[in-house]
Length: 310
Ligand code: NAD
Ligand code: MLT
Figure 1: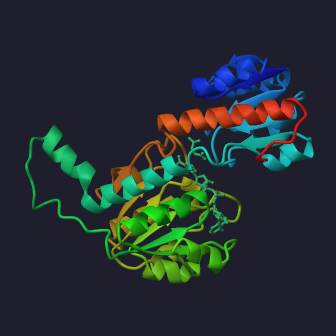
Figure 2: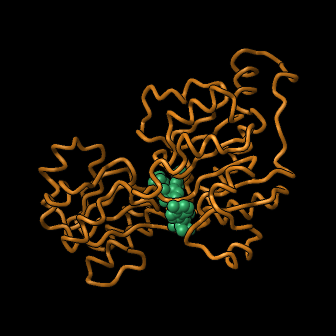
Figure 3: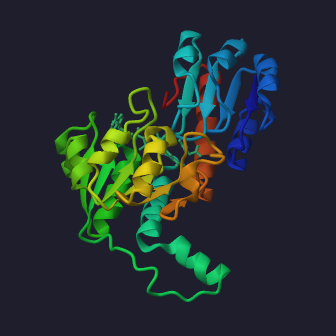
């Protein structure tokens, strides 16, 4: 059995695959034409978010039995096309939950307390400007979560420890389950109007693309902050940039972008936006857990067993 590892994968996962007796081919950053011409040689391919496994790649993967995603979001994989061809898509949905939740809190605090700008002024420009960097507290504020799954629930738990009131919009969660984590389940429009901080934690699907568009951004409480550590495509970036320029939003903290890397995205130049390059899962713990989990799943499918998460 031959396994192509097309994006960087932690050594823990590579080691597990070698132990599993497969022939491993680690080729990251392959040009698309090379991927299309070589994918037919493998029984399995493992990616993170960089490599797009669309219908054309699925079609070219004549021997593929399994596509592994070392992480949560499978929006870079055409799952329908794979399913039609009987190819199993597996991921590692639990491996980076805590890291992504912690990164979300870090981003929320960074934008609320203006840490990146204060750091830049002092460390790069040797300016000691205490009055310029007055922020806002999290305690006593309302946080609105769009998506109350694994990461949303962990963010809720941490936000409550900071003394925040937590709302959530999630059409697939019942109020009783939300109440167990001390969260009030509301409709999206209600959440937008009541939240001081809005944080996105749903997957990118056809239904959630531009879920937060110009119209919805107009309903956001004036002076609120938007945090997105889920997927860039869920927010209309042009509309967000306009809301930030007009001062309707106080700030935004973004880990993800519609196009990655984002190139000359107008959001990058704004003075009230904190950005990180898709680092939500970038901890040693999350990377080794995701690599190990996806390796186990791929080996399970190649052995003819049912995967734990598909
Ligand atoms: P999850 O499946 O546990 O939770 C997602 C939740 O979103 C579910 O409860 C689901 O019901 C809800 N949802 C689905 N459609 C919705 C809609 N239209 N409106 C509101 N809620 C909706 O997934 P998770 O582990 O919490 O991860 C969420 C997303 O975060 C992933 O899909 C991935 O794209 C992203 N993510 C990003 C990073 C990063 O590095 N920045 C790391 C991990 C995950
Ligand atoms: C995920 O969906 O798990 C995240 O995007 C993290 C990643 O793949 O780096």
